[in-house]
Image (cartoon, rainbow, N blue to C red; front, side, top):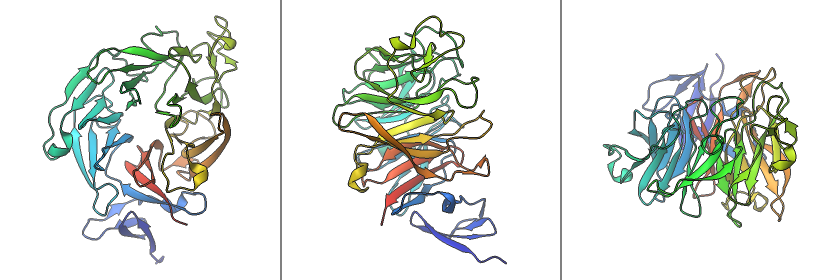
Length: 375
C-alpha cells in the first residue's frame, strides 16, 4: 500500500490514502483536491478554506468576517462564518435565484445578482440560520441567459456596479441595454451606463489611489485558438466605449462588424491577457501580508478555455503596474488546476481578506482557497 500523504489544509489535518480523504469526525470523501499540484512563488502556501460551496463564484466579506459566496450552478447564495478561523461553517442564505453569481455587502445587507434583477437580504448576519426573504432592488435588467450572470460590487462613489453582457457570441445589440457596465444607487434608482462596448465583464475593481474603474472582459469566440485576447481595461471617464462588437483587444477588427467602425475610435485595453483564458474576477492587492512588491498589483482569476484545442487559463495571474498606472508586466501567480489537459478546478474570483491573504473561489471544485505568504 502507498504511504499516506499528509498536508495542512486550513486548520484541519487531512490524510489522503489511495484518493480517499479522511477527516476526523467526518465521513470519507472521494477525490481529494490535489493542492500539492498548485504551484506558487516561493514563500506562499495555499489551503482549502471550504469545499462545501457548490458552483462557488463571486465573493464578498462583511466587516465582521462572514464570507458570502454566489453560485452559478444551484441558484443559491452561501455564507461562511469564521471563514478565516478554525471552524468555518457554511450556510445557505438564499435559494431559487437565477444564476446568483454576484454578491456585494453594504450597511448590514447582502446584495445578490439574479440575471434580470438585483435583490437585497437585510440583517442577514443576525439571521443566518433563518434568513429573510430577498427584497427586489431592481428588475430592470434583460432576461437573456447568454452572458446574463452578473458580478456586482459597490464602488467608491457608493453606487452598485452591474455589468450586462452581450446576449450572444457576436452581435450588434443596443449598447445602452447590453454589452456594458451600469451603476445604480443602493435603492435601485439612477441607473446609468458607465462603460459601453464591453462584451462580458465578470470582474472589476477600483484603483486604490485614483479610484478609477478597472475590469476584465472576455473576448469573442470562433476566431481561432489565438485570437482575440481577453482584456484588462481601465475606465478614465464615464461612458467610454471599449470596442465590442467592432474591435477586439484594441487592434483586431471583427470579421462581421469591423468594417462599420475603426479600432482607433475605441479605448484600447491596458493589457492583453491571452485568447480564451476566460479572465473573470480581479482585485487590486491592498493587503500588507504579501511582500511590498505586491502592493496595488492586480490579481486575475482565469477560469480557463472551453473551446480551444490546447486549453489555456485555469490559473491566477498577477499584473504589475507602474506609478502612472500602466501595466508593465504579467506573470503567473498560481497554476496547477489543469493536469494533463484536464481541469480539476477553475478559479473564478479573488478577494483580499482582512489579514492580507488572498481568497480564490473555484466553481468546478465547489471550493474557496486561501493563499498566504509564510516564508
